[in-house]
View (cartoon, rainbow, N blue to C red):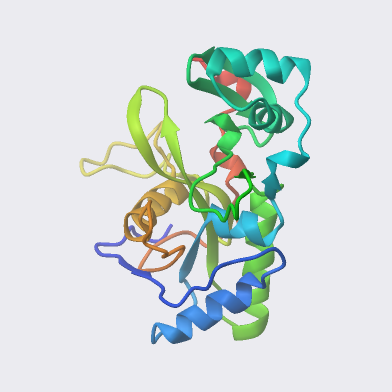
Length: 257
C-alpha cells in the first residue's frame, strides 16, 4: 500500500456554473480545472457535491407532482412535514427507522441510514414552486461514468468522489461523507500492517473515501459559497477501483439498528 501523505492540497474550483438537468459534468469539471489554472494529473481526486450530480441527473422534483399516500399523511402529522415530501422519503426508503416530532430517519435504498432519505430543499432553485432534490439513483455508477469521461478526454487516471453532508449516530452536526466512489478504495484494509512497535494490526480499516470527503467538504462550504467541485492532490492510496457501497456496514453487523 502507498504510504499515507504528510500533506494534502485541496482546491475548490472556480467558475462552476449553475447545473441543470442534462448538464455534462465532465465538461463542467474540465472547464473549472482550466479556469482555476490547473490540469488533471494521474492520482488526482475530483470531489463533487451530490447536489450537482442529482441536478444533472434530473432528480429535482416538484412536490406539486407528488401524491401523498395515507401512510405518508399519517407520518407527516407525527413529524410535522409536508405529506408530499414524506411520500418522496418513503419512496427512497427500504425501512423507516425512527419517527419523532421533526425527525424522520430511514434506511435508504443505498444502505445509508439518513434523515429524510437524504432529500434536501436547500441550495436548489424553487422558482415559486416547492422543490425537493433526491440522491442520485446510483452514485457509484455516476462516479464511474464521470471518471471514464475524464479519462477519455484527458488521459488522466483520476478518482471521483460524490459526497454529501450527513449526520452520524451519537454525534451532533454533519460531516462530508462519500456516497459515490470510483477509482480509489472506499474502505482501506490496514490489517496485517505493523504499528510503530512492530505489532500487527488486526482490526484496523480506514474509511479513506469518507476522510477525503470530510476534508473536501471544508473547502466546499455548506451555504452560499457556490464551490461544488474540489480538486484533491497528494493522497497516497492503493490503486484499485472501490465503491461507496463497501463503506456500508452489513445489516447483520449493525448493532444499533
